[in-house]
Structures are given as structure tokens and as C-alpha cells.
Amino acid sequence: MATLQTRTLGFIAASLILGLVRPAVAVTPAVTIAPTETDAGKIMAAVENRATGDRGTARMQMTITDGAGRSRSRVVQSRTMKFAGGTKQLMIFESPADVRNTALLSVDYDDGAKDDDQWLYLPSLRKSTRISSSDKSGAFMGSDLTYADMTKKDAKHYTYTLVKPEVTVGDEVCWLIESRPKTAKEQRETGYLKSLLWVSKAKLLPVQSKAWVREGKKLKYVKFGRIKQVAGIWIPHRISVRTVRGKQVVSTTVLEFLRYKLNDPAVTAADFTQRRLEKGL
Image (cartoon, rainbow, N blue to C red; front, top):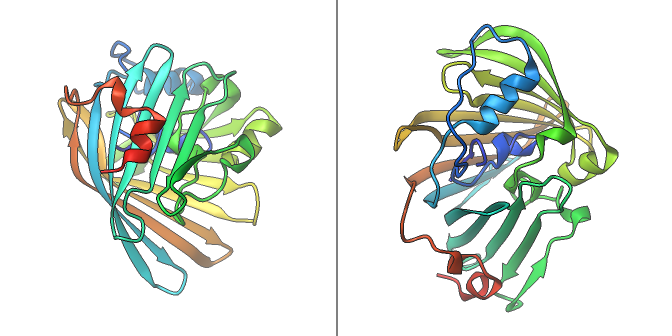
């Protein structure tokens, strides 16, 4: 799920790594870029266009901890598939019982001029509701993720600036890049004013980010850990999202991937309809 990466889990301001909690699904050719590159736009284009697989499935545990240290865990199943013009993702909550079969269907268009479509299904209401653009910066299921974090944002709507040509995060040598939305509309929909991205030069994906939240004078920190290869593709298997106001931690969400598979033939177009959304597990 995750990226969670190039077209998985968006950057925090551009969707937490181009699609934060969904499997990588881009099918563009592999790209190469020199570690000495200083053009931030070229670096981010290389991140976005790195080769990945299609038809992803995943099962993850989401643990949400509030400022008082109280935690609750949820297990989520997800599947993603590329289509002509974009990507579709279905996320269904497996447990606990009070959220079982709650589901989110996202249709993420490559064309940034077209609004992405999202529907949330709540079993208690027995119907799905379309998420409006004005609601996409809101929290998803009480987590530190927003609905906008579930989709990839068009790089043309952002300005990228190289802050530092080389910094080290753990064992990763990175570029430090600032990302800013170009329009007030993009700020409202994502909920972020700007973000900093630490991009691994070796893996061509962010290993951490820091975002300035548009409302509430908050900061959001994301760390991508347990990065390992799946079908030859680097995938973070642990994502930690922490929201801070001043010196106080407001809440933290940790995603742990229990299973992650790419190029799964079991994923079909029939998985991404409102009828399937409302069917549950």
C-alpha cells in the first residue's frame, strides 16, 4: 500500500509521497538522475516517474495515539489499480468491529485540472457519500492522515526548491527539497501551506517530510521506515505521522504493513465501483 510512494501513500502537501497509503502503481519507465543534480524540479520528476508495479494489494495495521497517550488500532485492507488516465484505490476496514466494512474508494486522475473522486461508505448509514473538495483536508477516520493524503497531486501545481544538495537521514544520503502549492485552491484542498521533503538519492523516494498545516498552527511530521524491496521496488513498510502544535504532540498515526503485493492478478476493474465499496469484506 503505502506510499505509500511514487503514487502511493503523496507528499504531505503533495500527498505524502504521491499517494501515501496506497501501493505504488505507476508504470512509467525507470529513470536515472545523478546524485549531484541540483534542479529540484528534475529531482521530483524522477521521484514521480520511477518504475513501479501495478495491481497492488496490501493489509496494514493503523494505530492512532492521542495527546494523552491513549491508543486504538485498526486493520485495513487495500487494493490499487492503474487505469487509462489515473489510478483507483479501494480501502476497507477489517477490524475492530465498530469500523468493520467502513470503506474509501478513490479515483485519482493524472490530469491535475480534474478533481479526484472519493466516496466514503459507512455501514451504519448503509450508503456511500461523495467527499467534496472542501472536505478533503479533513482527517480520515480520526487519523493524522487527510482525504487529500490518499491521492497524488499534480506536480505542475507545485513549486519545488532545493534547500540543501546533500543531507543525511540515518543511513540515507538525501536532497532536502521545499514544496509549495502554487494556488490557494491547492492549499485549501490539501490543507498544507508548504512542506520539506528529504529525498533519498539512492532510492528516489522521500524518507521523511515536515509540513505546515494551513489551519490550527500545526506541523505534521512523517517518517518512512523499514524500506525494503518488493518485486525489485523500494517500498516503506512503516509510516509514522505525527501532528504537533507548539511543543505539544496532538496525535500520532503509525501504519505497519502486514502484507504487500504488487502485480496481483486478483485485482480487477470490478474492485473499484460504488457497488463493491458498499459490499464490504
